[in-house]
Every structure is written in C-alpha cells, then in structure tokens.
Length: 239
Image (cartoon, rainbow, N blue to C red; front, side):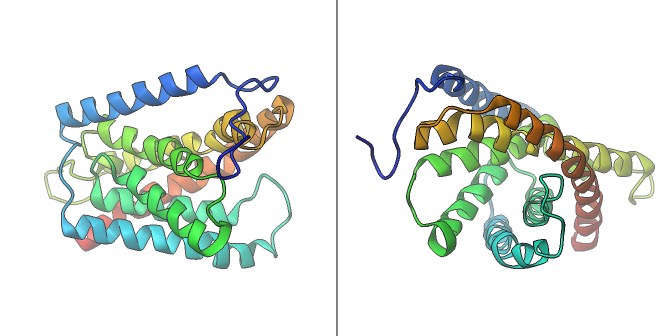
C-alpha cells in the first residue's frame, strides 16, 4: 500500500536508516539558518531576488531536459560526463551568487522540481522529490551561503581599489569547486541510498553507488570551480 507511487519502504537491505536522514536534514537546516542569522546570510528576499530565482529555476529545466539532453547525445554515454546536470549546477551557482541569501538554493531547487514535474516527469512520487532536491542540492548551496556570511564566491569582500582581487578569485574557484564536490553526493548517496529505495522499494547497490560518486566528483568539481569564477564575474558586471 502506497501513496502517489511511494512505497514508503524503510527496511530494504542496505538502505540508509530513515532516522539518520531526518536527523541530518534537521541539523543541517538548523545550522544553515542559525549561522546565516549570526553572520549575515539570512535576510528577507526582495522582488529582484525572486525574479533571479524564478528565471534561474526555469532556465535550469530548459537546459537539463532540452538543451543539455540534446547536447548529451553527442557526448560519450558515461557517468563521468553529465552535460545536462552540469548546466543546471552552473545556473544555480550563478543565481546563488546574485542573491546570496539563505533559502536561495532550496527555493530554486523546489521551483526547478515543480517545473520538472509539470513539463517532464509528472507528479508521481511527490512530495519526496521536492524534499530530495531542496534538502540536498539546494541545502548545500544555502549551507555555503550561511558559512560565508552571504559573501559566496568572495562576493562582497572589499579590496582597496574596489576591484576583483586575487583573494576573491581564489575564493570563487575554491568555493565553487567545493560546492561542485558536494553536488556529486546527493544522487549516489541520498537518492540511491535512501530516497530511491524509500519510493520504489529496492535494495541499494553500494558498489554501484560508490562508483558513481567517484565518477561524478572530477567533473562536478571542475565545473563548480568554473561556475564560481564566472558567477563572480557576472555579479561584478551586474552590480
């Protein structure tokens, strides 16, 4: 017996215990909002922020399911290359750099998932995919915004001449690379280790999952570093 295609399986062999998942999400959310409030990353959204978030989420859908999907046909079929996913990551990082407020990542990924359901997947399995996208990919972005005090990718760190210094450039590359590393984790660990088994009732294959984690990391780190640097340049040009 299930709800909306969700089997709600919690005892599959090798599945991450649901208690661990809930505790992690609760602690990560508390950390993001507490640190964001303490160091300045937690602020109310303005209309322009919501415009950036909405446009970014919409374009992420267009890229991942249409442009990226088409370009992916010309690339080798391997987990080491993810043109559609990399494009989404690039766009979300730019949105996060433009807004730089805790909640940006989660809201962007929530809207991304909503639009994906409308135009591509359908709503089977919801609300689990809303939770998955928002509290993994989105929350990682918000944790970085909170940890940097709203100065994601070195944006907002002043130099003597008001320009982009070596320090901010290095920060943009390093933070982008680290976020890219974090974005390699959700699919093989959170989805294949818990959300997939919970929804569809299958036992996770951890050898398969760990291989995919290792395969995802190099490309995601490189694209993340580039996205961090480009985001810094875009914000400088816009603002």
